[in-house]
Amino acid sequence: MRLAKRRVLVAAVLMLLGGLAWAQADATLATLRHTTQREPENVMAWTLLGEAYLLANRLEEAKGAFLEAIALDFLAGDAHFGLGLTEYARGDYEAALFSFEVLTRFFPERFDAHFNRAVTLARLRRVEEAVESFQEALRQAAPEASNEDRVSAYLGLASQLGLVERFDEVVQAYEQALALRGPDTELSLRHGEALYRAGRGLEALPSLTELEEQTSDFRASALIADIYLQARQTSRALWFLQRALRRAEAADNRNVQANLLINLGLLQRGLGREAEAVSSFSQAARLDPNSWQAHYNLGLSYLEGGQPRSALTALEQALPLNRDSGELLLALATAQDQLGLTDEALRNAQAAAGRLADPGLQSDATFIVGRALHRLSDYRGALAALSQVVAAQPDNAAAQLWVGLAQFQLQDFRAAAQSFERAVQLDPNSITARINLGAAYLAARRFQDAELVYQLILQQNATDAEAHFNLGWALISQGRREEARAAWQRAQQLGFQPAANALREHF
Image (cartoon, rainbow, N blue to C red; front, side, top):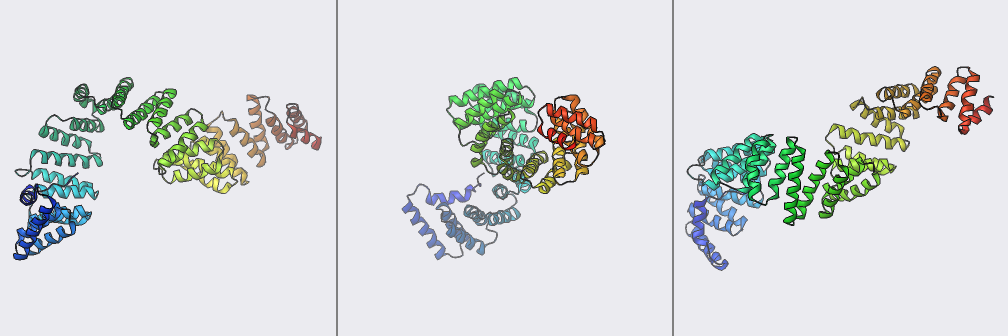
């Protein structure tokens, strides 16, 4: 947004400076300086000199001239206005805001004062106050402001309302701007976007469809696709997105093509068309090698397709382009975790956990941290991390399993057994959870429970040599030697060498 410049003041200076060469402009400045020297109490002379300095981008001198005018007459509104413009140009937005607030207090009828106060508040990210100031500028618009001034105010108001997601009011602001300006492609697109953001996309379809037919602007087609997607009309959304892509290709806009291909890939992935999604993301990455989203989504698709090596390559290309994305770091850590790159997975998962806002994704990152610490034999650290995951996701069977593994390594066999029991309850088909539950029961000297677990495992897979071996230990620990001998003999027949050692030791 740009500051409004009061035309009465500007015009007075342009009568002196407009259309002149720089040498002539310097001469005019000299004339104005001479006037202030001859008439040091002439408020208008100091104000005109300040404006001339401002137009020449001599900001410090402009500030001094405006301050001279204000020192002579605090109610010199044009001097406060010029000083506000100067401070804004100098980057001192708080000082600029003060000048415009003086104006709105003593000259509340000035549209330009309220407008520029709003612009400055927006620059300072004081959104709610900026909204109120734009609204007040519009209330004070008559008779000073032109239609185009009012359009600028409505656009400024819409931008601030959008930041606080008051999209119904954004729609109204754009409708007012359109009523003042008349047919306008850019405003029509913004209005349609606002309706879409407000969840009222269907209302925008008539005007957007007409606009899409009248222009070759790819944005209209892309927005129609978004609206159809919002309405769960995926086939129509796909058709319009491909239409937008063709228009961007015709305009030879590679960056736009890449962004549209990313959106197309996301839609294809959501429809389960993984091969097409990979193709779209790959094309996007080729068209715009600096698009981290293209590389990231390509890597994510490879991950979901069970190709961690390919995913790692794509994600490593994305990382230098955006090192602050928690989602990217999590995807990278996931690929590294699956490939056994434990140190790298730990580092990136820890970094991801500190950047992610979504609790579910935070737990995913912490889970990788816990597994990595376990693999690096830091069992206490692993238990601490994995316990956080279980606290956040008590129905996560894999997390319960890994908590149990850490507890087992710390020789807290009773707690490990409880964790494995919970893992089996959550995932009854997990052989890994059952095997570890049996081991925990054995270590906790709960031999009958261990026997039952291994019998259940063998019902599912009678050729599980290790289950036969562990069953033998559960049986011999209960004094059932012949049954133990039979279990170990079966394990030996299946090629499990420790069973032969147990037979020699006990028989």
